[in-house]
Amino acid sequence: MSRIVVLDYGSGNLRSAERALRRVGADVVVTADRQAALEADGLVVPGVGAFAACMAGLSAVDGPGIIGRRLAGGRPVLGICVGMQVLFDLGVEWGEATEGCGQWPGTVERLKADVLPHMGWNTVRVPAASTLFAGLDADTRFYFVHSFAVRRWELEPSPVIAPPLVTWSHHGEDFVAAVENGALSATQFHPEKSGDAGAVLLHNWLRDTVG
View (spheres, rainbow, N blue to C red):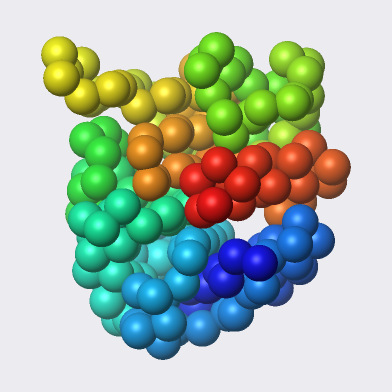
């Protein structure tokens, strides 16, 4: 059984993530303990609310360092919602720019849509090689609740490194809905609130990434 740490840095949704992971067979601990987070088979970084507040909380428990050290050793990390957003270079909310963890280039910005927040169930466009979405139909819907997102993928392709697999969704405009990049995976939507579809995705992450 995979031992998963849900990183507790003062953000919400911790218990929802814990329950969803237990549902698919993981042994889950919710903690801010640095050593436990480093040693776990998989680390989940949840997040709700403002980018700046999440980064402040994450930095207080050395979250960026923990994420960086895990990835340097090829150890799996899954970001969820704002926990995905903080993996990028920069978040801009209400005129305030906040540095993120810098694992991917790009900026989290307010969506250009008539209705915000984007709240409810939406489909996604998944790349053919995805393992995170394996077994899910093209019209599968996931639960989103957000007003900000990554609107452009800015990582230049490399001739020697396999490119990340980027999944997109649409609300007013296209935005990044998920990324699969070796040991680092992330979703803008909430798999823990997405019912059976979310359970399949978490099971795939445990099976194919965590092992």
